[in-house]
Image (cartoon, rainbow, N blue to C red; front, top):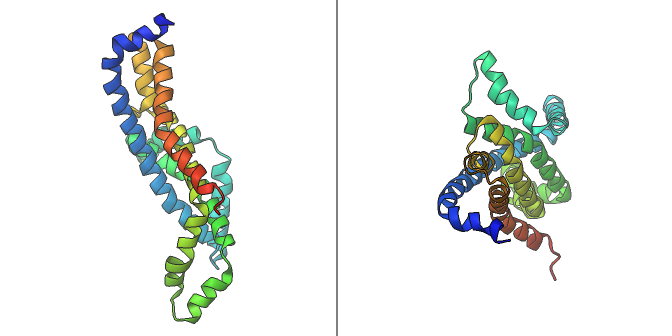
Amino acid sequence: MSNFIQPYLEYGGEWAPLLIKAMGTTALLSICAFALSLVFGLLLSLCRHTRSPALRHFATAYVSLVRGVPLLAILFLLYFGLPGIGITFNAFSGAVLGLALAFAAQVAELFRAGLMAIPKGQREAALAVGFTPFQSFRLIVLPQVVRVIIAPLIVTFVSLLKDSSLASLITVNELVLTGRAMATEYFLPLQIYLAVGLCYFLIAWPFSLLSRRLAAPTG
């Protein structure tokens, strides 16, 4: 046991700054990607409720297609494939966009479920008292949708956070890539990857607790 703990005592001062910096990169990557996925997901959900058949079919096809494609394939397509036609992303922006495009499909399904949970009569009542369609959606419908789906949205963010580890395969210097470099340098993969796992847990655990609290029945 002492042999297992000794590396932490000996190298902890060197490892901590590297892991903390990588945690910051992972958190920033996840937050940016999730924010973008919220925008994409909301737009997709609205497209599925529009009167335009073309937009409805596009949104439905996008959600079905992207949910059936591995995230890694999307990341490789953006980072390694698109330069072949002259479109280039750096590793971080490519990872943000790839994660956002992938998780937008999941977010769109959450928004769709939330919209279906709101009675149509509320929007009709808002229109009857003089609200524009946009005002009725922004002020009446959307706040209620957010309350309905906030807990599963947080769970989706935690999933995105964990899947952001795949960004290491397109050279984003986040936790996994940092851990791999440290393991190569120190030849202590067990201790280092356990530390990396703990870092993911420290980021994700508060959100998991918050999700459980929001999902718990009240009263």
